[in-house]
Image (tube, rainbow, N blue to C red):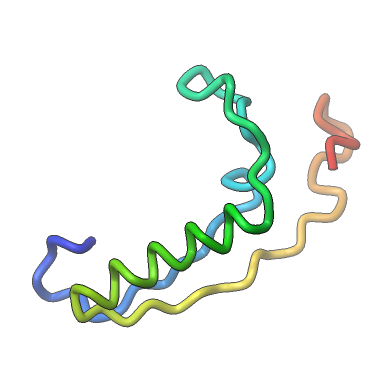
Amino acid sequence: ILSHPKVSTVVLMMGINDIGWPGENAITPDDKEPTAQDIITGYKQLIDRAHAHGIRIVGATLTPFAETFKGLPTEGYY
């Protein structure tokens, strides 16, 4: 995004799987669950990088996910 010259705004919407599923894939099997401070620090880094390129960044709220996993092997994970 930062290298595209006509980008003026970015909407940042991290998903539940981005935060709550660490270590659940073959690429990063040893990842630990991020702390609130880890997430805040990451957001601040993204904001700073966007602003350094003159890009406005808008944060979006995570959507509700109650009972998303009902009837699946991952039911009760959260």
